Image (cartoon, rainbow, N blue to C red; front, side, top):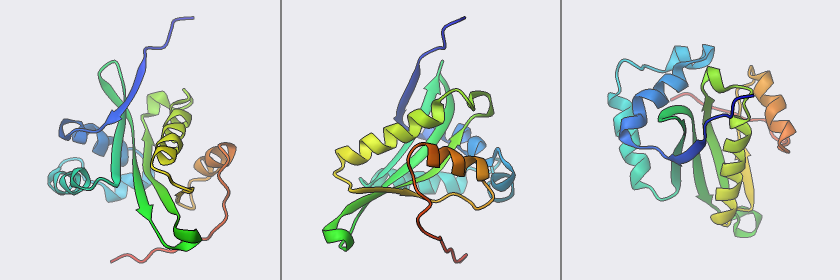
Length: 153
């Protein structure tokens, strides 16, 4: 069996944005809310992210190709005796990499980074329609302990 080329998880750069946005748009939900043809809003958001030390936008790269992305946000708080928590957002894995273990490596990276940042809790949300993702997160030890609410502004 041929060996799988090495995978690196590293901070995203501005030159990664087209690949990141393509990953965000590459599913039924993302296709309706992302605009890969106009990177202007993504460039502004990327600038805000890179200026905030509590934001970690990373990519997974294999053979010089972005094959995944996620955002980890560190949130200091008062509840839970002043606990710091992290939030995993925007996890996307290239279609050709699904089932390769990349998603697991990504979440493990986020958990380890959260420990380094002295977080007491790692949380995430997943769209109610993403039942495969729910099973994936539960296999990794996450509990569906809350009901999430959103208000579109």
